[in-house]
Amino acid sequence: MSTTQTVLEILYDNKDKFVSSDFLCSKTKISRIAIWQHVKKLKNAGYLIEAKRGVGYKLIQKPPDLLNNFEVNKLVQKNKAINQVYFFESTTSTMDEAKKILENNKNLAHKALIVSLNQTQGRGRKSRHWLSFGNNIYASYIYLPQKLNPQDGLLVMFASCIAVVLALNDINIKVKIKWPNDCLVNDKKICGVLVDIKSDMSLIEEIVIGFGVNVNWEQIPDEINATSVYELKKKTTDRLWLLDKIMYYLSALIKLIEKGYKKNILNLWRLYQITLDRQVEIVSIDKKIYGTAKQIDELGFLLVETKNGIEKILTCDSLRFL
Ligand code: ATP
Image (cartoon, rainbow, N blue to C red; front, side, top):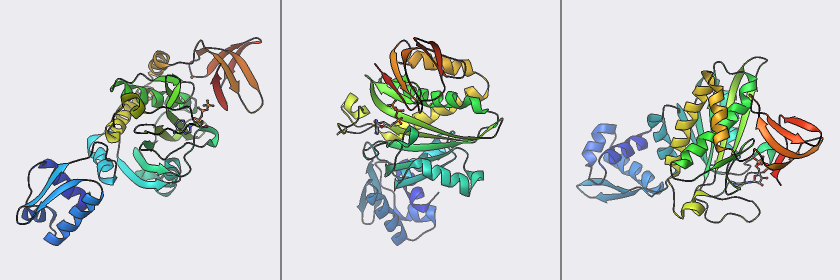
């Protein structure tokens, strides 16, 4: 834990009370002037801290949605799903950062959470652009499973969408899942999930799950058919709280898959899905299919009834409701 983080923890433990400089010095083994510098850093990061000469420092309040290095790092202590956190003010994409972490230090990568305030090259499926500049969640999570096989990829995607659904359900937002990777409210996208998997013939070696969740987006660009938690609730939501919830549900759901309870994931998906029984247009590299989305099979592939019979969709460029 960095010294600034330690100073913050002490101020949090004594919220609304003054903590003397002497106490902070004894706990951190640094000088008064150094303490003052750490407090200055915290103030710059958005905390309201009152300083009184001869008395000490008091944390007055944390803004309702403060996402910074210190706050995100608190998740490591709080949430068993997270072993370490990487925080960026801006990056190309948290998926790129995850890739770098896996290349540079795979031993430390398991259960790493990467969070960025903005992404300059956020992406959806097929490298489509994901707009990433609002006060939203842009995060990737690395998981190195022991015994999942390559066919479990779609189930991991479903588990990730269900985790978002359950987390938003906790604040009374009813989210529906569109096959394969989107979370919608009133047919508008509130979250997109991306799953990158590296596997050998029989086992998945690495999973990276990317989340783009529209949280405190007040001005949603017209060019996309999207909504945000802010638009639905008309108030600011604590992104850290939401991220903590998503990670909590996600790790529980991944454990279910690992323990072989795959049917439970499929049943949960069925409970929250909005794709089945709808007329769809499915575009793939080489063809376009029209029909009714009928069911998913035991691996999560979509079965579509067309005029030529049932087509099994393994992947597609886009799925549009008609
Ligand atoms: P389709 O919507 O055609 O089925 P998709 O849902 O699989 O494709 P993705 O690749 O997951 O699409 O996401 C990229 C698309 O999402 C973009 O083409 C754009 O339309 C939309 N989009 C981009 N940024 C956002 C955002 N922040 N919130 C919601 N939607 C977005």
